[in-house]
Image (cartoon, rainbow, N blue to C red; front, top):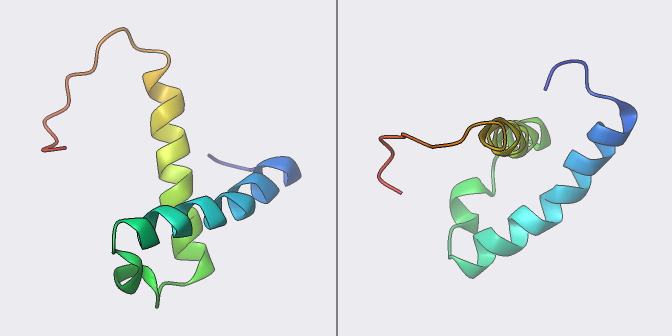
Length: 66
């Protein structure tokens, strides 16, 4: 996202809690504990951007292992 609206900024901040809950469930919180809020927001933003982009494609041809 570029030039986020105030609503988008607030939504990303609100999503931090959901991300933290999943990281705790998966035992991964320690890996992210020392990350800044800006870094966490970048992760969330990348996920949102990827999700939105995928919604506009018919097939996914990613080489990712997961």
